[in-house]
Length: 249
Length: 347
View 1 (cartoon, chains in turn purple, orange):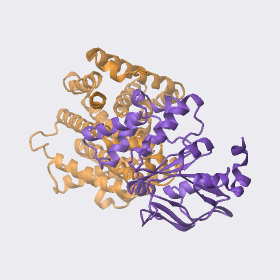
View 2 (spheres, helix red, strand yellow):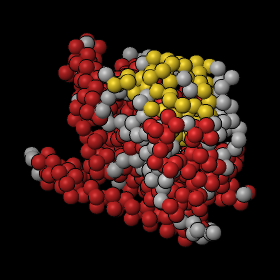
View 3 (cartoon, one colour):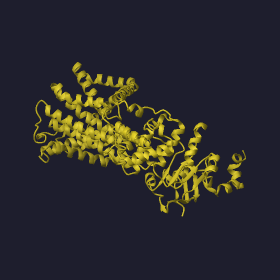
View 4 (spheres, chains in turn yellow, brown):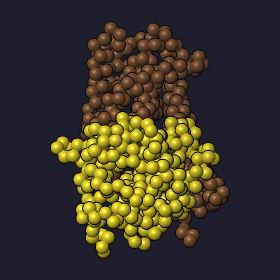
């Protein structure tokens, strides 16, 4: 059984069909990439999966459970977290506060209004672990707003990861990261633990083909091709609509 | 690994510690009891206004909810505490105060669902509308509330059965100050808790807050309810210390004053309401002494100047004061320099 599955997913914005009959199956532990030309509806799919948008039709199943009607925060509690293409960070908080917030929230201390943040050692240990993993150790006390873009991008993923998701949705994690900071980011994504299933949306074909073990191609809101990277790379139709230039170049 | 955990634990603990400046603030606040015995009346009003402003700061400064309707909670609890005292339902003032706060919080909970949706402007209108409606209900049922004449014949029993409200207002002021302090400590605890942090995250980025598993709606309901309770306690204090309650507890000016107080004092650091209330009250008092007839003109002028000229500069003052506190903290505890400051890149 796939860990995350969509059945006939459809989203209309007025007369525009942004997603149509999307049947996506992401296997447990997969490194699954969702690619497609601009405007193919990739971000719409992520928004539907994470609950930011409600589908016009179809269902979303997480570990066999129908989550179509659940609010975004409820999906997080069931084990699915996402990042955003454009950073959605808490600019006035420090990485320490932001990560501490997520960890407290997950450990059920989010409504605790009397104890101090981080008065439990389990919270602190987890903050440290996440800070190390995402290479944020030396900027923990800086305001997020003044961090270098690459670090902000890492924090963007760290916040989703701190939810301890079983399924992690990454929406163009490498977008806009300058060359000098890129390596750090890609290495961090490579090092994500194997038990976390990753669904990656990305434009960067180097990243997609080095990272993914399965690729789905989305064109005009519909799934076009779905398969292993070699198959997708060989598929003449994919070359025709999308990959042509990038692969030949 | 272990050292970094210790460092972070220490940092978080230190972050929430009372700074020397805060301690000095409260020492001075309590010292006014002995320093200015002739000023009890205005000091008492200031303490009540400060608590009322604190209630607005909790939702405005920490959750980003703007409101013109805090007077609804202030007024409801004001009348409630007056009525329970008048009819001898709850005689002991502290218990009556707590009950008044709970009644206001209940109204806050119910009306919170109205302010969840919508922009700042809708929130302003909805909150204003609620307080207008309550004011008119109080006016309509004048057989209970006394209507335009106000609630007469309120007799407040001694606090804890020991301290009678005296003519000089000494006990009344001490009572208000202690209540303000207790409420402040609770608010301070709250904003440094995971709950407080989650509120700041909701204010900072609602979309992301939901995406990390925060039930945004319930957090806003919770803080709005708590804030209403604080506003209610302030309203009950006014009734108890004056043994009177009139329709103007629901007035728009009361809610608008709060915004002015927070504009003067600033939001999001808890002391804004307190400092703003002190400046606002004493400015009002000073100008009213200079020109008893036209004092509102000068208040208006001062506010316009503050808003137009001073906003950036005042933010600068706050930063300067914070910087000074940080430096003072560093001097008192040299080790914190390595923790609080920017950690140099060790690689």
